[in-house]
Image 1 (cartoon, helix red, strand yellow):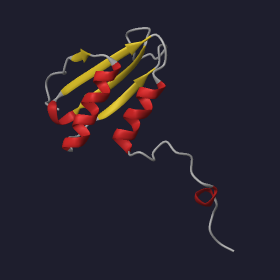
Image 2 (cartoon, rainbow, N blue to C red; image 1 turned 30 degrees about the horizontal axis):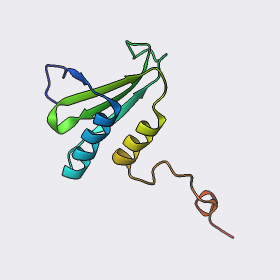
Image 3 (cartoon, rainbow, N blue to C red; image 1 turned 90 degrees about the vertical axis):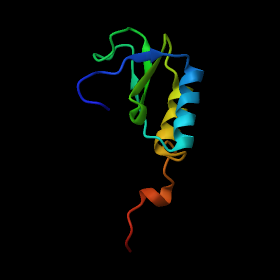
Length: 99
């Protein structure tokens, strides 16, 4: 991001937020997301918020809801961190090696 100014958050619908994230991922552009609960001190609204920062574009997108957007949040996390990021590790992965 450019130093010296804050990008303006563009409010979009949840479906549009996912569409933008998919486009960024397909083009290999850098992006990340934030999830803010309705009672988060960093959240200036009293709604749940999902924020998508398109770092290479210096753009920020946000969507708000009165209810947690778990499905959208999971989809964003998979796009950012990989499809298996939210899977439970198998028992083999949880066990320490050794005799």
